[in-house]
Amino acid sequence: MRPVTGSGDDDGGPSELVTLDDEFGPPAGEALGLPTLRRLLVDTGVDEAAVRRAEEAGVLGFFAIDRFAVPGPARYDLDEVAAVTGMPAKQVTLMWRSLGLPEPRPGVRIFTEVDAEMLGTVAGLMDLGLIEADLAAQMSRVIGWSLARVAAAMVDSIDGDPAGRAADDPELAVFAGTMLPTMTQVIEHVWRRHLQIAARRRIVRELDAGDGSRAEKAVGFADMVGYTTLSQQVDEHTLATVVGRFEEIAYDTVTSFDGRVVKMIGDEVMYVTDDPAEAVRIGLALADEYAADEALSDVRVGIACGPVVEREADLYGPVVNLASRIVHIAFPGSVVTTDEVRQAVDDEPTLAWKSLKPRRIKDIGRVPLWAVRIAEDQDRGSKPRSDIRERRTEAREARLAALEDARPRHRRHS
Image (cartoon, rainbow, N blue to C red; front, side, top):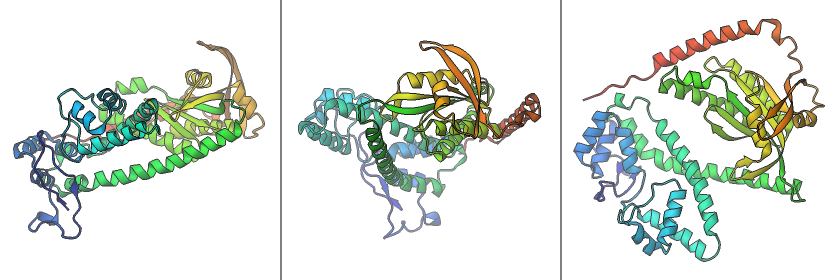
């Protein structure tokens, strides 16, 4: 593996991405046959003093991503890229902002040849009438929001103790040289798979609602109890570990029942299914999975069903609002549903229902509610719940203490 060398741009960026060179192999004389991250940066025209400062600060890996993520130097300012692409400067600014990227300033060169090619392609499609300006902005928002999360997760996945790794560690160079092209392939493939799934869902939705009525869905929210208190008691590293585990369980559990995670909202997960019974099973499974995890607290689950509006993979409407509000009525570890959900799955023999006192929900009105559990779980309370919770709390506190003790200790290297 070797970098493609070339003169840097005005702000010091490399002219090409780091590439793999399988045919000729690495330059002779390099330790272990691999270039180091420091060597990669210097060979692509980065000032050695800047590399040294990044190394001393323990951010060399992030510095390399900053240098290599975007291929090619910035060549155009806002007016220049508008002239090259044929897209009005106002439209360029709108699209750039919709993508979640820093707004271009007049006279500041931030656009590369690749940027110009992408904007020119979109401008051509708009000129041909194949895509409307509003749709282009809408898709830009979705793409920008989604890929911003991917990028943040990728950066966060890098060694939690960057100062603990030396710049001559070949593994960092391998990461810089292979991760970017690999992630491009992964993102494209996963996008195609999700595109297929979205098309199939749309087919089913249109066939089931040929009269033009809105899609009927079951929407659930699962909220982690005590998250605010926990966030004030542990450090950022431990909290990130807890949140990561919370998200992992949510995605694994929901998808195992053929549901879909709509979004994560801090300490809360929103999911959706076509079948209310499946939504209940997901809710009960989530309650059990979180209860079994010593590092996490209980969740409470709220479920409602009915017509919803689907837009950009998100859901809107009174059903969503109702589900998001009744989740806070549920006791820790329990699942609460609306009467519509109970009626839809009332013949399910494995479930047991308990009528709750109707509650007045803000902006919705008085709502009959039901608590649901597994019918076979009759003897669940054979031991006092207070004893069970006390033991689980002790185990969880011990687990959190262990996480804090194991967190990376940042140190500086000369």
